[in-house]
Length: 390
Image (cartoon, rainbow, N blue to C red; front, top):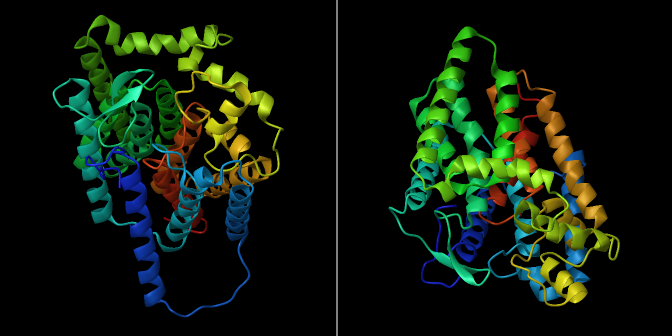
């Protein structure tokens, strides 16, 4: 799906992806229904009750939205209306019920990941061109086939633990090569939220996986290669674009957290979002209507993105407190299922790092069709692992 683009349309990155995801998901669901036509009535599991409740709250939020059209179809260049949110739940459920580990499928996924990553790296060095979008009154290049460089960072962070795990546990060359290009893409995005997620997740992964001296050796090789990539990419850029300078801004922004400009203006959004949390607490303003809320409250302000740059604040404003709580219940339940079997095999450890990494960067980033279906699929796989032994 991340490879899907529509260069003949004004929206190059997002409309095509949601159509592709909906068509593939719908076809797969119909095929499975055709192959298994029998319907067995049974009580819903806990996780199914959570999904049903979340969908009902999304539908109610849409029905009482301040802009029903936007809530159904989503804002242009974002497209996270009711249709997308329900689609994510369907993707979760299909992976929850049907997922099976396949080395061939994993290999094909990593090849696609490598293509997306290499394209982004070539753009970083201005060897390859890319689509541009109007941002803050000027034109900014989008990264690879994912969209914004922030989204490319999220994409990289979702797959990096998988590639690392394939090398660390299976000594698979494709895993190592994929890990290296994904790390290079992650650095090229210069997205600090995913850099923070990377540090946390790699630390957790190291603790989970370190059992033998051979594993320690592989970790050493991986870290040395990562350090070499960072050093080369830092050295080969002009002073203003150096990765080391970008990394230093994490500290400087933390020291100036009270300023609106901190976090690439995220503090600006958060300060104006927090007072609105209890204006429509039950059903929110409707899916994908954050921009409407901000304009209605503050008039014409410098609002580049129609989202809060924090997924949790975004959900609280647009879907309401009950839907946000239900969503967090789902995430916590999935993580609990993974943690209870974390010692059973590498898949549990890898998924824990993938999901945790996404949740960390989500505090500073936004959900989008380029990456959200991948996250929900991983949540579904994590939920399925309950009771698995391998």
